[in-house]
Image (cartoon, rainbow, N blue to C red):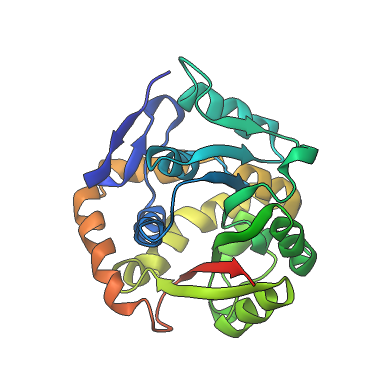
Amino acid sequence: MSFIYDDRRGGVFCPEHNIAPWPMVIMRRAAVLDIMQSLTPGNYIEIGFGTGVFTYEFYRKGFKCKGYDIAPEAVALADSIFNQDKKTIEFCNELAPEDEAHYDCLGAFEVLEHNEDDAVLVKQWASLLNRTGKMLLSVPAHKKKWSDADERMGHIRRYEKDDLHQLLSNAGLHVQKLYSIGFPIYTMFAPLIRHLVHKPMLKTLRPCSPQERTQRSGIDRKRESQFKKYVPFSLLCFSAKAQRFFYDTELGESYVVLAQKN
């Protein structure tokens, strides 16, 4: 198994598993990398790492990384891609007692919206942080934008800014940065992407429960990967830089938020 890391084209490419940066992933990655510049490398844990590509970004920046995901397939996939020669990143299906209050930073990207009781979940995640630990999240934005894409991915909700502030405050966290991402480029093409990708896939997933869709959403990228033949990745990466001018607006498709323990 081999993968290619190409920063100018959006990150990790692994043809054997149809892994190539999806346009929204490129937008999210750019915002996460912007925030990462303000973080000091330390112990990092990612919840719901999917294919492991974001965990790898933190590993590249000097963090000691652990990834936790409920799907055994995700662990096997991430291990086969990033731990070919040696165990550089620990991917697992279970948390250990020593994880409590251990981490300087916790990441969870497009995870919170899959869970019924997000308030309890955020408090559980906060318990994994040390007393000055930081939490870095991304979630889909704006309830009015609910679509076939949310159903296909197993989402339960979308978020408004006030929701995130309240949710994190109740868990003892203070929001430091909150970015709106995806505008203008991804927002322009989002309706077309929903029609060509999410709507057809949703038809095949109708019999599946939201939990089953959630587990598949993290690692099933076959239909998205077909677009790598047509998507100019370098242009998307350039466009991801343009979204910086709109971080403080309400125009994007998702939020990326950094919060610290009070």
